[in-house]
Image (tube, rainbow, N blue to C red; front, side, top):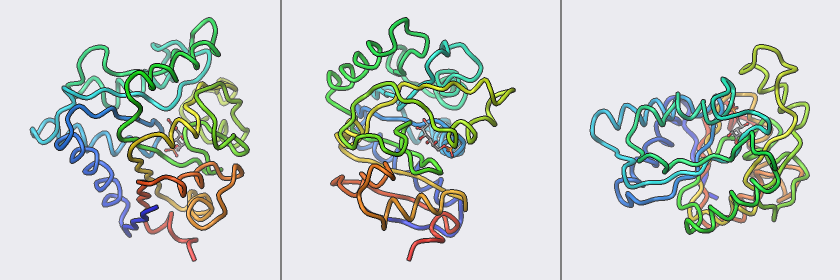
Length: 242
Ligand code: F6R
């Protein structure tokens, strides 16, 4: 695991975005794995700027998002599909149909999860996976105690994750209790993984991910077993490393 610390949050964000842009320039047909959440908003803004400046194109790429809330249709204001359209897809040149998320409103969520895993396999697996970090150490919605071999499936969100994500909903009680998420095993199959985390509230999880034992108690610690994982932190998120 390569750990890169930038004192400045903006530099950490720019570094992550620049790695994606460089990957797309060297391998335009990359299958990207994408994340949502507050951390990624600035990354996607930087990528949109790079696209407008002619420095990056998504025209030959494809993408699979990590996760989606069970019960939310793609056009729901708080769905991750809507987030991705607003934060990235509507502003860059992905071909129509090249961007995938699990359907939160699928009539059979378990079958949807299995079909999503199969679609990732059929695409030859993720080439470049972007990850954020939950305060509780989750990646995707693989909450603590998730199997380190898990594949795309339904997960029950913990109280801490629902609390953390309540800021995106009008009423905290509207935060769904279930999500479809790529598994830790799915993520570990990606050719390259870049995790970005910043802010003091990620410091404990970052320390457990990097310096703790590989354990389902901190799902992100599984990245210690990945051959090409890069963790980018700002000074605050790195503040509890030894
Ligand atoms: C989102 C996802 C989550 C977030 C994590 C951090 O698709 O997979 O693992 O990356 O919860 O969220 P923020 O960035 O909002 O702190």
